[in-house]
Amino acid sequence: GGGYRKVHGDEAENQYQEFQAHATAPVGPVSASLSGQYLAYEEAINGEDKAMTGRLALSYATSKSLELSASVEYGQTPEYDSEIKGFFAVLWRYDASIKKGGTK
Image 1 (cartoon, rainbow, N blue to C red):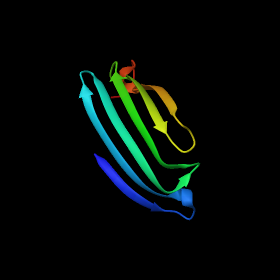
Image 2 (spheres, one colour):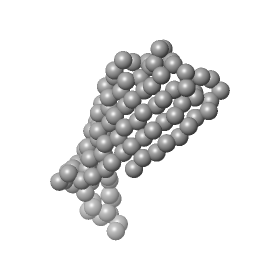
Image 3 (cartoon, rainbow, N blue to C red):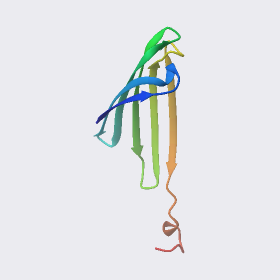
């Protein structure tokens, strides 16, 4: 998928065009998504008139109750020449009906 928007803010740094693209697909037992964002500022901020970020996210369900997810994002923005962010999550789905004596 993709998207576009033009933002008309009160201040110069809040006036920009935003372009986005993203894709999601299963890769064997892993769910993968890839996304990118490009911002074109109307006026330069810290000498930069654009910003770009890209992100890769992976998710793997080890069982019905447990899922592991990780993502990494790389960006070049007016604030940073380059930045890398990472995220890791563990999702546990508790189901009382699985336990002995639980309701179904």
